[in-house]
Image (cartoon, rainbow, N blue to C red):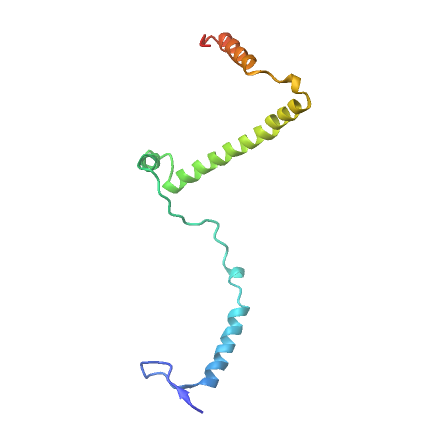
Length: 134
């Protein structure tokens, strides 16, 4: 049986290829049977690197410096929460008001207003509110 030196420092014993293969199979089966997810909780965050215009970066830093947020990440997270809330509000408005109005208009086109009627309506509304600009 031929042996191969697997260590360069010469301190470890020579191991035969058959012993190495056997050890490799044993460790391989141990590794496959080990489930790292069973012992380690999944990370619930992901680190990212972002680039902001100088004005936005200064705003983020100012919010932290003023004590409004604990970190730059908190500022960005809060901004994303507001963006999600705005998107939800837009979707709700489209679903609850725009789509039913469009459906009603398709069903009864005579209910629609001309562009001139809309302008007149808006001018009258501004007059009632006291702005006076038509």
